[in-house]
Image 1 (cartoon, rainbow, N blue to C red):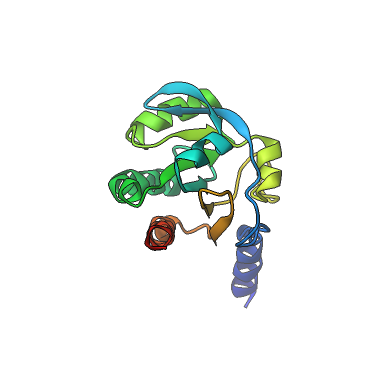
Image 2 (spheres, rainbow, N blue to C red):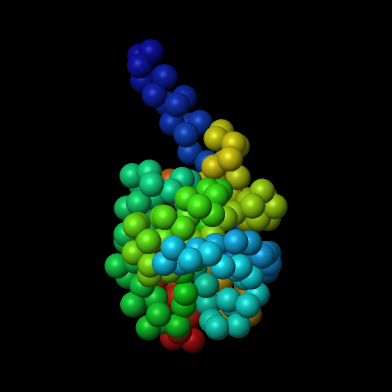
Length: 174
């Protein structure tokens, strides 16, 4: 009984709160530093949205098993996202040097990753209270006009790619 209770308590504290930004909300704009293919650049969300919908996915920590698997899954599906007119941007609280390396090794230079500043973490409600300095695993699909059309907040990385891809494909069909 003690083991069961301890497991339930641990599980309750391990799961982050649901994302506060609801579908239909305006996505907060931000500018930060990112990397793609190991090269550093400035990322401004509003400029990215001029090109089309954006999948903005927050991940806890570069080079951890779940985040690496998620990056691989997004990189393997990048052609499908592009076909649907969307771009993928990964975000974490990692520094740019780490993200430069991660962008090549784990994202396979297929999409950019960027630093989620404390202000961006707060704006998107992805600061993980139980683990300061780490973001939750939350994916947002943002339509070209800046409205959030889909939110998936789950530490299990396995459904983020499928759910975000389905959302951008629905957008294209409109």
